[in-house]
Image (cartoon, rainbow, N blue to C red; front, side, top):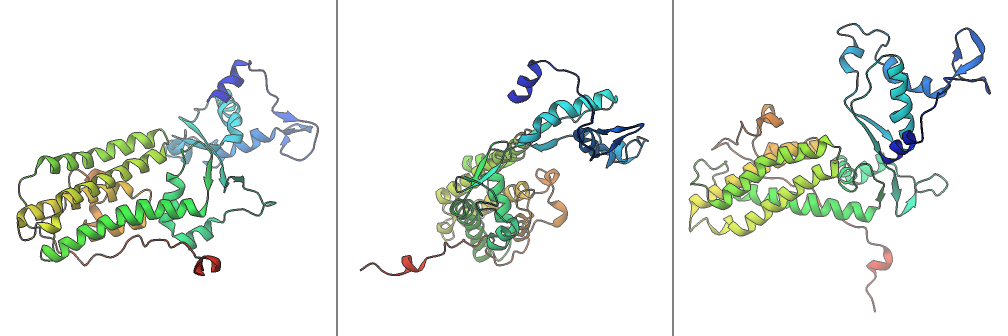
Length: 333
């Protein structure tokens, strides 16, 4: 933003839309000595790909332009924030509604380049850590728009902490207790909610709003943070209520606690779907949430149904083990 405003404050001057110092490029009609300025040629692809100049009702251009959000690399921000709107306004066409410039990834504190041999292959990341684990790390590790640093150590730590330990263990603990102590089904009857129950459920119901506010400004890391915080609250709640100790003393309270946890996890999994879709749907499967009740619109209207049979829970996020070198494996003498 400051870069663009600074450029504009210097004063805007006319921009030539053709070049004569080289011959490669799109020729200017009627003048063989000129070729089109490369950014006119390149930027026009955004609308020509939609069939422009066909602007008829129902056309792709009519349906998709202007774009709600235009995401670009920070090194070409000026061309998209100043030149492209100028071209569009000159043609009396609407400009994108919002523009966002993303930063760069470094690796182990160094710039990524072929010469350094530290290029990160996303296919290898997926094969090594998993699709959802890779998605989670890339969208949670940095403030979107700023530069971020990748290292295997950071990825392993974050995935193990937030997914395997916090969310994965919570799901397994909760659903194992349900499977073993509630007749292999969602509790069929529960008691009155306590203040602690209402507080956790209120936080879960607010999760959609919190996540939506974050994503509306492309704060993807804050979107993740809101769900991670909800999982922390769930873990505090299960430790405080200790449902495993209520089986003999207060089975109704045990059932209530477990149902509250299942409902909170339903909100977590539905909101997590855009970020870690496969894993979130595995959790929803175990929670017995029907496939046609997993949209954001169902958060408030489709609670988990009492008495629905549940299956024995499975591990959703296996811990990533850090490889041990030969030197580390040898005991110290």
